[in-house]
Length: 205
Image (cartoon, rainbow, N blue to C red; front, side, top):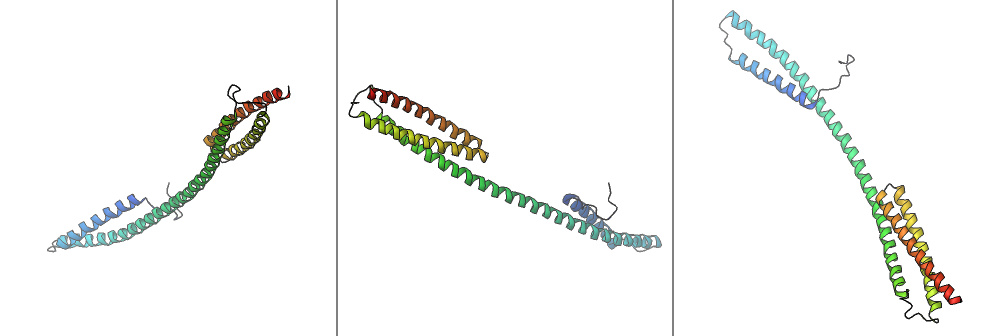
């Protein structure tokens, strides 16, 4: 629907360019006709005069088309600038979230490294079918297992904190991995505690 208050939207860039191109072809056609038209009769003179008037009108339309094209170019530039701003904001958000995820993954790798160290210590200290486990060594083993239990408890708390941080930032996959890691720690810790109780009872009997 046309806007009668003079605030009509400018035509699209392609439409404005095509309109200008069409008017230019009309202008060139009129110019050629005027330049080469015969002027040997009243009819020919009248026809040339009419072409001149049409040419003047065409010039006015050309000016309007140029203005329309300029307006379309300006509108296109404004759209491009708006899109560029959106892309810039999005790029900043991408970089920000990439840094957040990188920091979370660094924390996760640190937790996994510590868990591997704990697992190595546990494997080294675990008795194998009672071989090498003497009453003299039992108190030291219980102290090691107690220390491992405390470290796994702290590590589990760190994993829970990591899971909450990842979930809060909507990194669902990292949150799931951290929770699975915490559950593995809990399972290992439970086995250690069962062993501690078993060895402790044997030590007290």
